Picture (cartoon, rainbow, N blue to C red):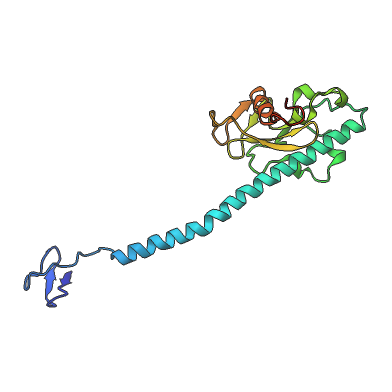
Length: 207
């Protein structure tokens, strides 16, 4: 294979750095032109700019589905209590709710790799009378996880449903970040939830 000198047109054997006739520098065989490299980088950057928002939106939609699931299960749990003399279920998981929801797909979080259900009733709420629950807006009712372990499936945190039926994303304190998919004891998660729902000074109940 020979390399053509761009100055004089002489055919030079491969491996020479300079033309044997005029001494001009020869192009290196197999090299990629700088313009082609720049074009590839620009194309990659453009593609990433298109894909990243879609990926973020996709993750956000899965998070929203999980939040909606918990909201429906919280309402189903409270409807059960209303039909049971204001007493919450005696089972940590389901099917106590089945008469109060339309589809059992709400039992599964889109980010959960295990078998449904993806959510559990807080054991301390088993059989509790709603009227006796203090601070229902700060007391956990349902959590993401199983057997007393909360699974942090969403941005290093997890959703929780409270006794007043509102649903909130709960994450660790900023000084204690958690890895995506990690599991924490329910007691630890309840501390995070209490901190996240602490009334602000000056607000009703905030001192």
